[in-house]
Amino acid sequence: MSAPSMEERQACWGARDQYWKCLDKHAEDTAECRQIRLTFEARCPQQWVKYFDKRRDYLKYKEQLQEGQYQPPKKTEETATHT
Amino acid sequence: MLPTLRLLLLRLRLRGAARACPALRQGSTASAPQRPPGVGPRRPASHTCPWPSPRLPALEPLTSPARALSGEAGAKDKTPVMMRLLVVLMLGVSGLVVLLSLYQEKELKRWQQRVEQLRHMVVGQGDFQLVDHTGQPRCKADFTGQWVLLYFGFTHCPDICPEELEKLSGAVHLLEKDPSLPPVQPVFVTVDPKRDDPAAMARYVRDFHPRLLGLTGSPEHVQEAAKTYRVYASAGAPDEDGDYIVDHTVLIYLLAPDGLFLDFYTRGKSEAQIAHSVRRHMLTYRCINQ
Image (cartoon, rainbow over all chains, first blue to last red; front, side, top):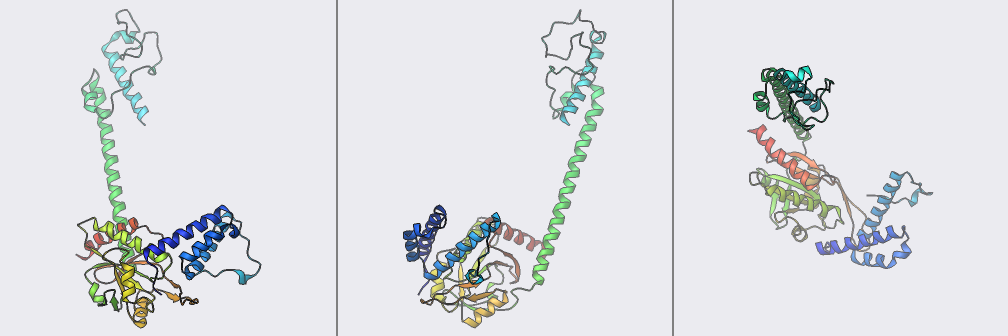
C-alpha cells in the first residue's frame, strides 16, 4: 500500500478539519457529526484516523489543563496513550 | 527634557532682547509699537511675571543651532550653552555606539560558544551508506563541501513530516533568494526503510523542494544513520491493512560543509527563523574558519 499523495493528504486534512469544526460547534457531540465523520474515515487511512483522534483528545486535554478544568478519568486504562 | 531646553532658550532670548531695548526693562510702553498678543519677543509692560507667557511663539528647532547662534542680540551669551549641548549630544551618541558594538561582540562570542558546544556533542560523526531516491548509493563524503538541512521522517506520516518538509523547502527557497550565499542541500532520510524504498521516496519528495534528496537503504544501514544523528524511531503496531505509524524525533539538522552537525531546529521554528539562523551560521562559519 503506497503512501498517500499530496492531494490525498490535503483531502484527508480538509475532512479532518471539517469534522473537528463540527465537533467544536456541537460541543464534542459525535452524533451530530456522523456524516462528516464518515467522509473523514473515507478520505484518510485508518491509522491516520486513529492518530488524529488521539491528537484531538490531546489538544482538548491540553485546553482543559490550561483552563484548569481537567478531570482525571475514573479508570487509568481509559486514558489514551499519546505517541 | 525638550520643554526645559525651550524655556532655557526663551529666557536667554528675552534677556538679550531686554538688553537691546531699555523700554522693556523699565516697563514703559510709550515708544513700543502695538503688537498683537502672541507675536514678537516683547511683553506687555504690566506683565511682571519673570516666566514667559504661554502665548509666546514657538522657538526655532534645536537642529539649527547656527541660526540661533547668529541670530539676534545676545548671541555671545547663547554660544557656550549650544556648544555644551552639542558636546553632550556627541558624547551621548558615541556612548551609545560603543555600547552597541560591545553588545554585538558579546552576542558573537555567545554564538561561537554555542556552536562549539554543539560540535562537542559529536552528532553525525559516523559515516552512512544509503541510497537516494534515484537508486544511486550515497555516503557522508558525498555531502562534504555542502551545507545540508537534514530531516528524518517517513512517507506514511499523517501530518508532521509533510509540514516539516514544507518548512524545510521554504527555508531553502528563502536562502536561494540571496545569491551571495552558498546553496543548501535539503535531505530527507526515512526511518521506515521497510516501506520507503527508492520509488516510494521519489514519489514523496517531488511534492516538496525540487532539489530535495530522499535517502533510504537497508534497515541496518538506515538504523546506523539514525543512530549517528541520535534520531529516535519506533514503529507502532500495524493495523489490519498492515499500516503503522513510526514515532520519531522531529528535528531539522543543519550540517556544515565539513560534515559536522552545527545546529538543529524544532517544530516551533518557522521557515524564516531557520533561514535566518542558517544565514548567520554561513557568515560566522566563514569568519571562524578562514
